[in-house]
Image 1 (tube, protein in one colour):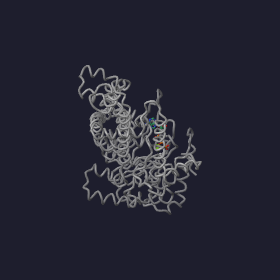
Image 2 (cartoon, each protein chain N blue to C red):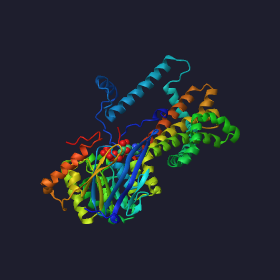
Image 3 (cartoon, each protein chain N blue to C red):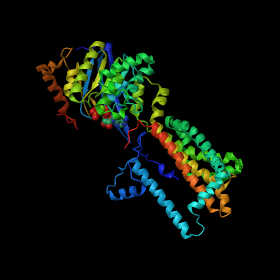
Image 4 (cartoon, rainbow over the protein chains, first blue to last red):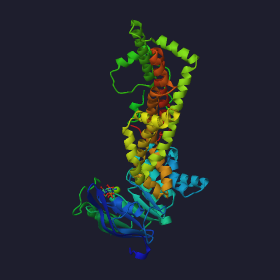
Length: 267
Length: 292
Ligand SMILES: Nc1ncnc2c1ncn2[C@@H]1O[C@H](COP(=O)(O)OP(=O)(O)OP(=O)(O)O)[C@@H](O)[C@H]1O
Ligand SMILES: [Mg+2]
C-alpha cells in the first residue's frame, strides 16, 4: 500500500518522548516516524513498556513531545480534540457515573439534544451488549464489561480518528472476536482512521492493513509489516496460508527482537 | 468525642442497607453468643452489633451506678444526673446552652468548610496558588486553634466574633488540607478521558475533579466538624457567657458535679450525632466508590 504523504491523517515526525524519573531521564520513544493515511487501519504490537501507549497518547494530544511532533490532518497536535476518540488501556470510566451516563458524557459536551442522546447511547450499549447494565455503576461491572463501556463511550461521539489502546485485552475470546467483527464492519462503513494497540498477534494481523512492530529501549519502530489481505475480512481468512505467514512474520519480529526484553506471556 | 479517630481511613459502611431487623436475642443473650463464637472477623449482623453496643452501654451505666452507690467521693449517680438533666431541661438552661454551642459550631464549621473547599481546589489546581497558600496552611495547622484565643481576644474583644473565628479556623484547616489532597490525587487518566471527549478545563474541573475529590472533601468536613466541636467547648471554657462549656465552667465554681456530667454527656452525644449525620451524607454521596 502506498501512502501519499499529503493525505496522511496522522503523521509522527521524529517523535521523541522522554520522561523524567527522579533525576534520570527515560527515553520512552525515540525517532518515531510514521504516516497513517486517512481511513487506514493500523495496529501496533511490541513488548510491554516499548512505548505503545506513549505513542498513542502523543497522537491524542495528551503529551508534550520532547522532540519532533505529531501532525493530525497536517496540523500539529497541541491538545486533545473530540475529533480523536481514545480508548484507554485502563478503561478510565468515571466511577461516579452509571454506564449510561459514561457513554453519554461526550455527547453532552457536544450539546447533542437529550432525545437524540438517548437513541445514540441505546444503540452503542446494544452494540457492546451492555443494555441490561445501563444503570449500573462501573464498580459493579467486570473488567471486560468496563472495557466494553469504554468502547461504547468512545464510539458514541463518532470521532474521525480512533486511538485504541488494547481495547479488547480484557475480553473473553468469543466477545473479542465479536468486537473485532463489529469494529471492522463499522470501519468499512465509516472509514475512520484507526490506530490500534494490541498484544495479540492474531488480532494485529486480522484487523490491520499494516502492523507496526515496536522495539524497546528506547521505544522505536522496529518493523512495518503490510498486510495485503482484502477487506472485508471474514473468519475464513484466518485459515489461509497468507494469514499464517503474516502471523508468523509478526510473531518473529515481536518475540525475536535483538535487544527486546520482558516479552509477554502470550500462548 | 468521636472526632479524633475519624482521621485517615474511612469507615466501611455500605450505602443504605435495609438493616436486618428483629430475630436477635435480647441483650443478655447477645453478649454471650458473641463470647461463644471463636471467630474474630467482624462478620456480625447489624442488629447483633447494635445489641452488643446497647449491652455495653447498659453495663457501663450499671458500673457507674455501682461506683456511685459504693460512695466514691462526690461522684453523682446516674439517677442524680438524670434528675439534674430534667431540671435543666425544665428551666431551659440546657437547651439554651446547647443552642448557643451548636450555633457557634455550625456557623464556624459551615463558614470554614465553605471557604476551605474553593481554597483547597485552588491549591490543588494551580501550582502558583498552592505555593502562595500552602505555607500559611501548614503554619496554622501546627498551631492549636485554642492557642489563637488570646490573640483574637486582644485584637477582637470578647464578643461572638473571636470565638467563631477560632472555630472557623479549626474547621477550615482540616477541610482545606483534605480537599487539596483530594484534588491532587485525582486520577490523571480520568482527566484525560474527559479531555479527549471534548471537555475544556472548566468542564474537567466541574465534572471530574469535583466528583473525584468529593470523598476527600467529605472526610475533611467530618474531621473539621470534630475539630470545631472540640474547639467550641474549650473556647467556651476560656471565655464565654453561654454554651455548654460555660455551663461546666460555672458548675465547677460551685462544685456542681451533676451539671458537669450533664454537660459532658450532651457534648459527647451531640458530637456523635453530628458525626453520624455527616457519615450518612458521605455514604450516600460516595456510593459509587469501591470499598475495601
Ligand atoms: N507519565 C510517565 N512518566 C514516566 N514514565 C513513563 C510515563 N508514561 C510511560 N512511561 C514509561 O515509558 C515506557 C513506555 O510506556 P508505555 O506505557 O508507552 O508502554 P506500553 O508499550 O504501552 O506497555 P504495555 O504494553 O505494558 O502497555 C515505560 O517504561 C514507562 O515506564
Ligand atoms: Mg500500554
